[in-house]
Image (cartoon, rainbow, N blue to C red):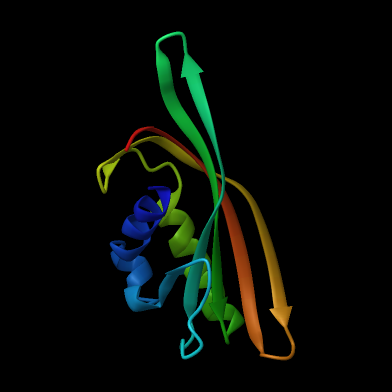
Length: 129
């Protein structure tokens, strides 16, 4: 459900797909043959919210990890990811978004693979699927 929303927002963003092919945007893990740069997104948790009338919305947390062999390129990708997601509202992939906001960021480097990584964490509130 939320994965379809995340992929839709990322893969349809022109600025982002100019930097990372939509073929290189994956849920949960990279394929072994993946060429960099690439993006991996994960759903970290979903908390439903109920009223006396039943289900009202879900508060979902998710992460987007951008990977590149070049740090400068990575920074451009991270900016594009954030711009593709942050403060998005409306209906995407049949899911109504109240808002998306960033809640954190981590960076790293893997010396064994020579890959730079950036993880952006977000919350999204959705009111229907």
